[in-house]
Image 1 (cartoon, one colour):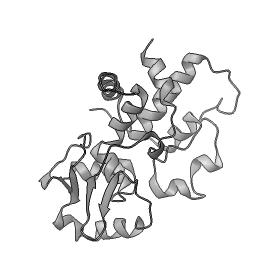
Image 2 (tube, helix red, strand yellow):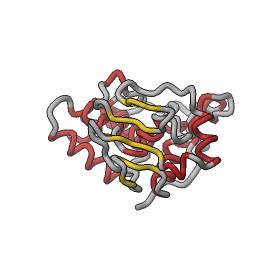
Image 3 (cartoon, rainbow, N blue to C red):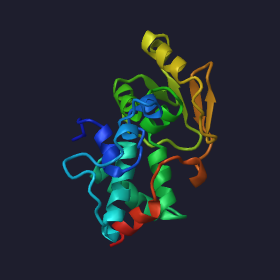
Length: 208
């Protein structure tokens, strides 16, 4: 599966908002968006009138890049969201939030979503006591996620857990810090999702 391997700070600058793709660095003065909040390239600082379609496209791209999902998979999530009861846009965000790599990041078990994907692929986590190495694995209410005991004792994970010890964890995740386990208590409500996107524009984009 193709994935973006270029400088991620350019993605934030292109979208005109922080997508928090570099973890803790995004909260410091070292963040590239803080120093250059305009789009990259020769014409990045020029003012352009954005069409309605352009706004919808940007909203979709922002969500994709925030969660690190490719185009085909993101469209698949939208089709899943349409079939579920409730508001399609909110359903879409709930699906993205319930990805294993995203949950790992929210729990503070990785410094960024990109790092969470890599650690999942390397088999450092378990779901319901079984190893899962698929970052896009969708968690359900009642599922239990944990760090493998061998991994938890490594210097790498000790450093990660210490660095993220004070990071707030969403209410829909029931975290046991001492045991390095967490339970999916519920699917998140819209006000519990921190994604900087306007999901109604994504729905309009795909509904054309």
